[in-house]
Length: 163
Image 1 (spheres, rainbow, N blue to C red):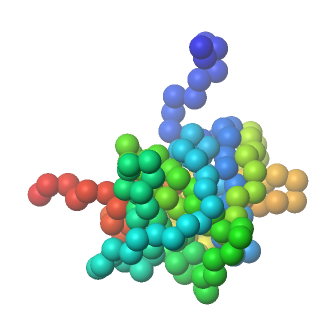
Image 2: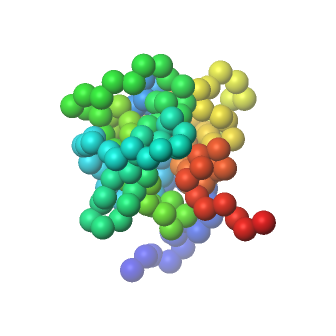
Image 3: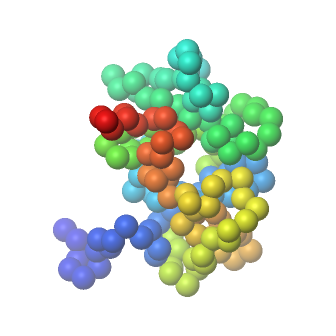
């Protein structure tokens, strides 16, 4: 049972726990509550006529899960799969989606004073999907609003609304 007065009912993830992962040389953080599981990268079934960043789908215990390679999506150069490459299985907007990243670091808790507003320049990721920049010791984390990103129209993952 949650203690009264300690629940975070807002959409802000400030002061919450983040799963940190790497893409290229950058370290990112996403709300741990959106993460269902973490698995090693496995072969995916390619689907014709999907955007390049959608690698295909996997069957996860009877659920067909689209797999998005975030390095391709964020235009981070050559994509190589190795023993550190992992898939973060997310549950966003009542949909299960897999996200390929270079590696998972750890889970950290950021207090509000460790999170700064995102700059409006120089990022591989569109800043509308960045909640802020987190600082832990000498590390800087790009905090991604993963639900907003995965449900955006340019991801082509969610059903189109009936017109």
